[in-house]
Image 1 (cartoon, helix red, strand yellow):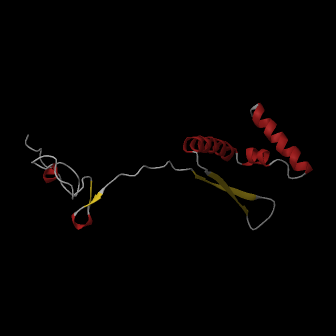
Image 2 (cartoon, one colour; image 1 turned 90 degrees about the horizontal axis):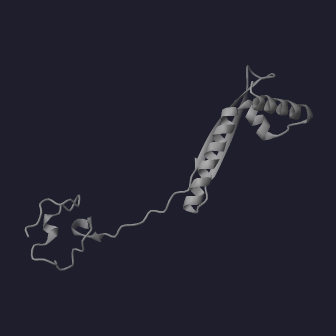
Image 3 (tube, helix red, strand yellow; image 1 turned 90 degrees about the vertical axis):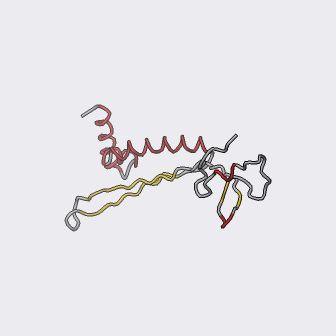
Length: 134
């Protein structure tokens, strides 16, 4: 057993003798992987909050159930949920064309050239079907 783990175990046992003690000490002893995962997820959440300037949440839920109908043993399970803030997404300008289809060019605008590029664009995908002749 490492020195750090031994210290945590001793601290949890000491707190147990005098009352509920530190939640962090109990978590580190009973669910050490959860303790580490929570620290990692909190760090990532803080990074996301700094980048977006918006709030986020980290929630942990513990389920405690008796073993064999009650007695001195329980099973402890956990669930971690992170709701990270989302970055703002910029909108795109589009025009409403025939049959209410969105398109990048204004259907009511006069063409700039004799050979209008719109004739060479697939209205469904916006892809150029053929290059206009120069």
